[in-house]
Length: 126
Image 1: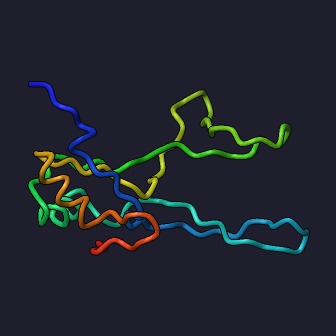
Image 2: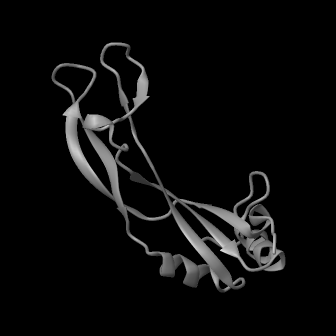
């Protein structure tokens, strides 16, 4: 059976994460800044599934991860970080997820409540 995943899936932002904080040098010599790096998600797949099951049966939850970038000291441009020996770049939580429902009607029901139109706020915030 073939189906269109896009029609069944919501993209969710601001998924709770834990951060590591470290002091780094700022623009000026005596200036220090705090850098926050995401370490892990605080919520689990089951937590998200439970929240969205209120709107319909959730068939799939995918927490999103991605590589991170660093500034190349020579070119002053942002490059995707590669670890030594050309291994896959380290992955960090991106703070977003995909939530897939079993039917378009269920996805539409969730979208109607959770997605705002224009400058409005959504009627429900999770």
